[in-house]
Length: 196
Image 1: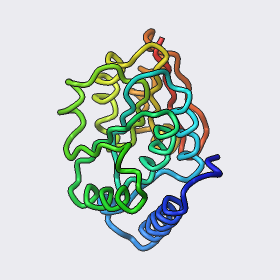
Image 2: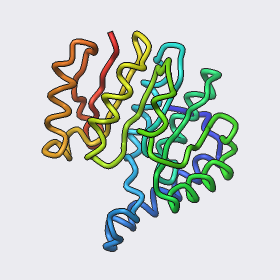
Image 3: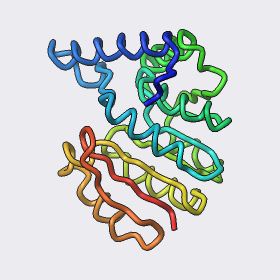
Image 4: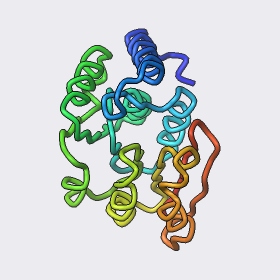
């Protein structure tokens, strides 16, 4: 996918993949690690975002901007922008560097702060990628779903590898009459919800 991916983006993705692999092996403290999605998840969410109806694209949990790059490539094809939220200042710094080095800043709005403090003013969401601290998933789900357009997609990462921590939220989504939902075994597991 994205055979026409710009070389600057490929290089930055490879750089972030190296850091992420090293962080996982060398005992870097959890909050300091990038903890980004694997490439197959990046491709998956980009493909899904390309199918989203007209509306706003958002990401909750930017880290260093790896998944944002995949989504920004999709948004550029669609003539849309993505707004991404990150709470940790060091990750915000890394994400800004990522977006500047890849030339994708024109389709990315990076918001520093807790997404839960900002989403109240957002409407018309057509795509949301949720990859934040697991204890905020339910709050984010509850904020995003009512603000989604019909046919809009919410994708939540770690639905398999953090199933214990996310069990209640996943069960709620699977039973939610507002969405059609399922867990897809891509990467670390993706909860995919489509607004009815």
